[in-house]
Image (tube, rainbow, N blue to C red):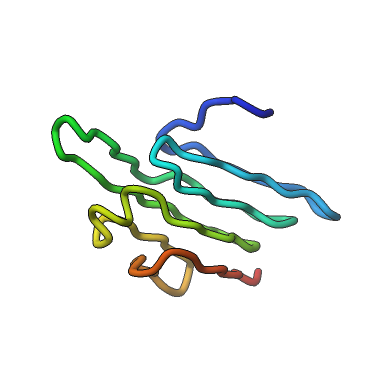
Amino acid sequence: MEGDPVFLRSQLRTGGGESSLGVTFKDETMMSLGPDSAMSVESYYFAPASNRYGLGARLFKGSMNYVSGIIAKLRPEGVVVNTPTATIGVRGTRFVIRVED
């Protein structure tokens, strides 16, 4: 539901058909999942006062559209998205990935 919190190790899933899910993190990073997708938030650090920044996610299946926020701008090497067959290090501002079953 809109406004629901996302916690560390949260499992986010969408159903089939035309379902989708969008998440906006505190640093303005946005992730959108397409139909029949599953991902988890592996790590998230957004603590400007202590200069700690990082975001790790794992896409198990389906599709994800990623748009970077402040973390990727301040510490691009701190953003990683894992899939069953590859790891994506974020160096740009947006990408789309798809993981087949």
